[in-house]
Image (tube, rainbow, N blue to C red):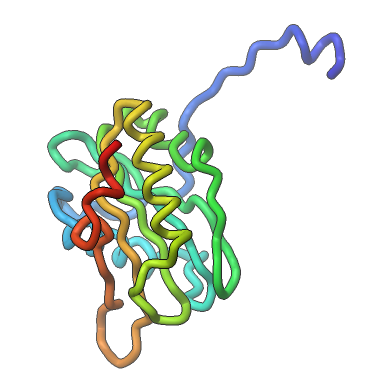
Length: 163
């Protein structure tokens, strides 16, 4: 590191990458969160159902959406988010609640052992940062239906969300 860089102060802030028209909805349940996820990915340029993708949706305590963040783009079978980088936009936005999403290009809604570990790890990181991980939704592959099938990890294993 150069002598000049060592003595610089960086101003850090939140940058809005893209704005979507408001849905005028509060996110109070996994179903509400899924609807926002579907709304955003249908309008995004990065969504590819053949790649595993990890996203976060973050809200205030009343469920008003503060932001949506694409945390990791993976390959056909995995995506590895950096938890600190994933939660940075949540912290910068001053949010209180987080919903975690990732899709399975295989279409399976069955959580993998890695899904369970990441959920537990994110829940612990959120607890340390005074955030609440509300749920982790696994999104399947949309076939002929108009919506993607999905499942809630909180509904299937509440213990993942408690310290």
